[in-house]
Length: 355
Image (cartoon, rainbow, N blue to C red; front, side):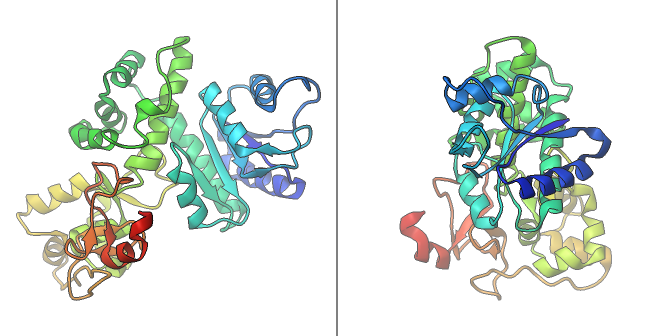
């Protein structure tokens, strides 16, 4: 793997390069973009486009850029959006970050089409680990044994769900994953134009296409996969116990998502596998399953609007369990496949005009 870093502050660049090198180990390298002199008669986009095709930056696995690049040498006033446009032209995945950003920055970044963002708020080491995990995720998709012809045809025929399901080793979830493409602002066909250039170039395009879609849609919104809060709510188990009870964690460990970007995301579970476990024992929900297997009482999930009511769903704004009656579904920015994604009643009343 090769990671190319855009950072305009020397001190921050040194820290992040060191952290990325430690995280990537012998699996790859990191190159700090310094900017070459010359080509002053061309636009920044054209200059960077040319430079990224030359050594030592050529054939990058991932381009990483600070949100503020205004002090970059030879490129005064450079913006991350220019870097992103160049990355798109090169069919190279791009990730952005900010020095003093938390969840709000990441949420805002991912509201844009096909964006990946991480934060430095937890320190360079954690940020570097996420960056390397993202690069690994794209490399894993690139190296999957799914034919180029099949992937290209799926993009042209809008059958991306079948291909992504194959890439993830879960062909049985193709119909469910396909719902994430239907009506989704991040539908793969909107991201890149597949079909031009040599096969290796098209493979890079397809890798970007499915990687962005997987990251900020399928893995982001609970439906096919669920995070720990959504999983606990869906199984009707109180979040604290689902997270901290070793017996419960062991019971559902076989349902953990371990595909591309798993190391960069919070823990995720395959919802279909959770369903299969409950159905196999012919029980009502995961709470009953855990109680029967562990032979002890298991606290039920608690809706964030009413603790006496079990959850079942996930509030995308409060990131808490929420019940059907105390929430609103189907907001325009929810992919169709994300049928567990809701907004709690109180948050909707507060923010409805903006949602």
